[in-house]
Image (cartoon, rainbow, N blue to C red; front, top):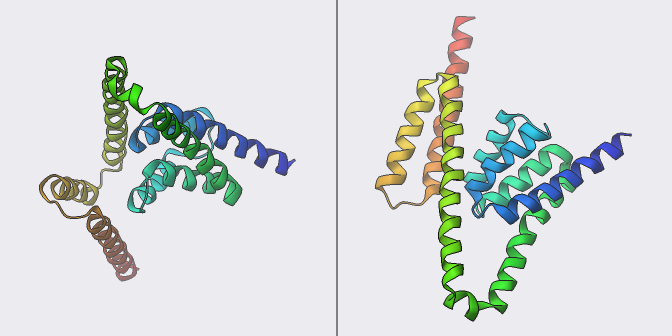
Length: 191
């Protein structure tokens, strides 16, 4: 019975990442939709677990949508889940790129395609904004000043420097480790 349940989860992961990747046109937009599908609709993981997967996906090299799909798949159904989710996620872009290559001349010169792409950009902005608001709510609920300071510093770093984001990820990870170590020492001193 457990094997049947795992296969069902793998199928859910594959079909839904295939659908999400077909409709959401950027990684951050995909994450917003993934929350609705995998957390709210199917209950495969909690919102906090998705946030953890997203944080890891952002700090890993490569496209966030593929990274998040793989991490979610692995969390839900192990290596087969990760492979199913990644496969579902990469099929639509591969098919899309093949179609663009075949019909390149038509796409470049067609005014309707240009309008369609402008509309898709607006939709992507809405999905990314929804994702950002969700993260903002998560930070607000935790009422942790450290997270607010880290978020503000991260925003300033991204907005006003041209340095690679990997330095920001390393800084945030180091800050979290230091905070955890300091809190651990405080607990030991209190006991």
